[in-house]
Length: 567
Image (tube, one colour):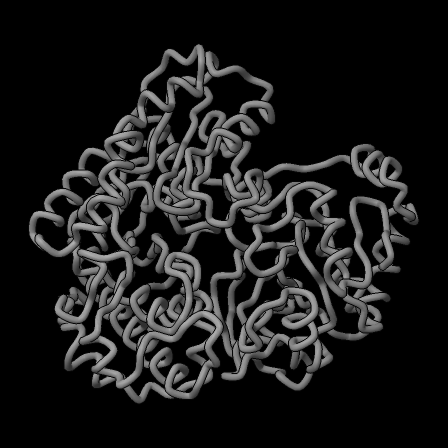
């Protein structure tokens, strides 16, 4: 049985194809359109999924869309009526898009899938988030907490799951949203909403939470159970295209930071304060969910679950024995989530938990486009690009040696990763022992802000030697204290932490073997891993896009399949 999942029209559009409940293809639309955070209908992603499975639309049993457009439209209309006459500009910009296209998603799906005769279902937004985190987990039963900006009406929900059933029992509703609270600070500090929240998380480490009380006394009321109430007189997102208003600016004594404006200490301190509030609210929520469900396990979903600093605090300070976060907890991940909900909950198919962790990681992550050695060689030959072809042992040994000598290497291998992180297939790799490597990568390769940290990839079995963590973190969604910062300074953030990826041999043997070779040379089982893209562009997809990275940046080498290309 083939089931298709689709998410679009907000940000990070994506498509995912399941076969008998297993993800066999999943990709974001941006990887084909080359428009970062593309929110359009994912026709290119759908087309690739079908070609990957070698099927036609007529072979798809049923389709799921990640939320209920009619309910979302109802919320928009209700909101605009409530805030009138403010919001006219936003109304005239938003509503025609819905009336013209977004309400008619069923017609758009049928038009794209010519020959498809099956059912189309529309799970609620937070059910799609819940499904993605629960059905990628190893748990027979679990509490569920989903936190994001907003779905239809819900901004936060919690409940529980057992076997193949998910039940969400409580929620917080628009406009009181922890996700939008954090996005307001993202906007105020000069970053793009729905894109720059992870930048705010990195920036926050440079500041002190001096404005924590100011925020609690004015912007947000937090109850003991983690429920929140925003004072909307400071926020503009209900009636404008910006997140905050003049009252917000007056509260902090500064205007919103412009994109190219220098980041000053007050920006760092405001960021640190917002981050602390977010973490404290999430901890209260986790405690309340545990109290209400009595369960040992927690599945965490929604875009806020991309905040690795908060995730680590929930794991270390929260009441749950185990916490699971899927590789793509935001809206793109809901393309998989809604398809999983369709297969397991709606169609009531039995759930079989994958006991092999390596296989589970591989199926959850390595499900995107790939190019064979023959295709890569054809591209290189056609474009008269010089290369060295190496067999696997020599390829690994030479690449590890180059990295140990301070060279920056593009690593383009196998299937593209699902989700926002490069996890060893579309990565740029470097030596973590050299403190200056962080600045070199930010300035000369990624062309991005100097405060942005880089992630360490570490052999799974060595993780507790280098980080304050006693379990795998395969999806780069936990930020843990570094035990040996002097050994790996380039991946140790200013606050002494690192957003780590543990690498399992069974899940990604080639990447594991490369880190092992580096370990043999240096005695360090860690490599810097950052995604193969420059700021403002999606992660590379094709060999040509990968090659352009070595052309337009100071990357020294590019390894594509068995081919080594030198700058």
